[in-house]
Amino acid sequence: MAKGMREIKRSIRSKQSTKQITKAMEMVAASKLRRAQEAAVAARPYTDKLKEVVSSIASAAGSSKHPMLLTRPIKRTAYLVITSDRGLAGGYNANILRKVLLTIKENHQSQDEYAVFVIGRKGRDFFARRDIPLVGEVTGLSDSPKFSDIKDIAAQAVQGFESGKYDELYLAYNKFNNAISQEPTLKRVLPLGEIQAGSDKADYEYEPSAEEVLNVLLPKYAETLVFSALLEGKASEFGARMTAMGNATKNATKMIADLTLTYNRARQAAITQEIAEIVGGANAQQ
Image (tube, rainbow, N blue to C red; front, side, top):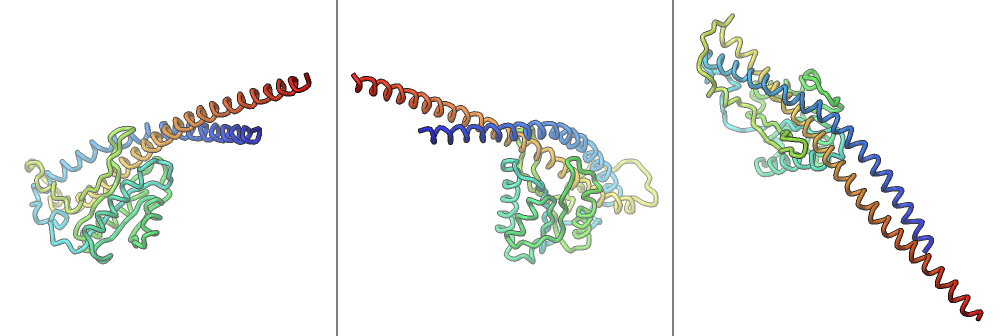
């Protein structure tokens, strides 16, 4: 009985240590979430305004002629998948990776039909374990990433479409709704079909020409969509981690309460047994 009580007490101490860690991680994630959420929300008006400007210029330049706006027969598809470097974030990584893998299996017969770019160690390791080659990867991003951190991989993906290497480009990321809700999203960003249905032609003069301005802005806009998705993904990551660590803390609290109750019952049983033995011994001597 004493041995069992020592094991229960040791288990209680272990759960208490775990609870302290998960509680600290929850608070850290909550602090980082606030900054990441502000960055994600702040990026949306910029992306929307850039889309408006590009739509206006495309209307002036003749949008149907630009290669980034043309839909062509799909021979090869590129996927840019945004994950995290660290785990302990609930289903944040698993949900989006499972969605991408299912899409690949359903739509492609061989590896020649698709290419995968990855941001984040979890995504890189996931595809490596499944022998899916990567054409580009970025890991080790800070908690507050800058555009320069992913500019190269975004440009590589966009230029691959421009050159005809890929016929469409999809972004796979977790869309941030709120701290407890993140939506795994697979979004086609190239070709930029929605630009063709943009705003009416604005009364501007372009130098040297609307076509030249569009040639510069369209790739920048596509790269901005990648960065905006990354910011959404970062906010989603911290929201998922905060929720996961909060649930872990609650579970640890419940386990500690259950173990404490078990310990108290075992202790009471041991005391009762000792009293019974003393009384039995005293009666035997009479």
